[in-house]
Length: 223
Image (tube, rainbow, N blue to C red; front, side, top):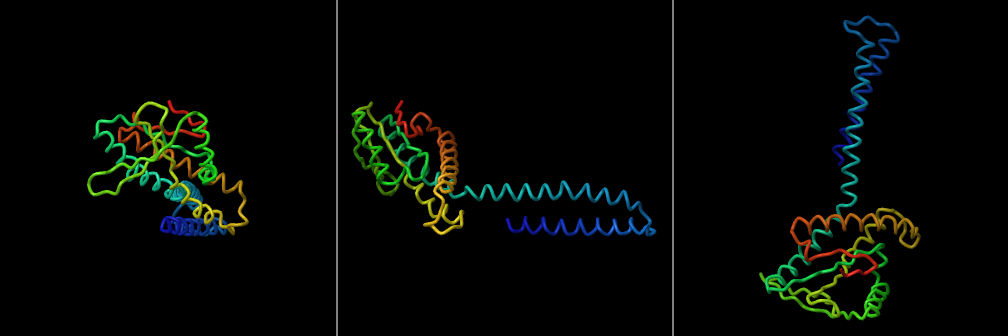
């Protein structure tokens, strides 16, 4: 990104220098072998799209980098946790349905809020247990929640890995942790959650797991 930034600055300096030089020649009506006025307009025509291109490319890279952590978390979560579990259950002849809870805010993943989610499930006469799934290829077992009270092979997971975004948010806002605006934190957190969700959905679709994996929100609708 720095190379793009410095290239843009150098391009501006060079083009503007030529433009100023031509303007001086035109102002003092110095004799030249070419049309100064035309040359000035040509350079101005080059400057505008060139700088716009560089700025847009630089901005796009900044935007992509801004959410790269959330995208990486989604890749790790789906490829190292979700997919291996679903694959193993399918190998056993099961027809698993995994519901992944996507929070509205990162604070929704704090322990007390998770306890409230579990309490709401209990009110719906749904009980939660933890099941250990043994994976092949020397991988460690994975623990996942099962939901009793629905059809067989219904699983539920909360991607607590999203909480690792909190330190990044503190850094992005560049403010002492205890003085952060909760509104700013929530807004940026929501943007990271959305990036995580979009990447997760793309991976689920690419891997052909749409029939086995669903993303749900705080309404906890198990269809």
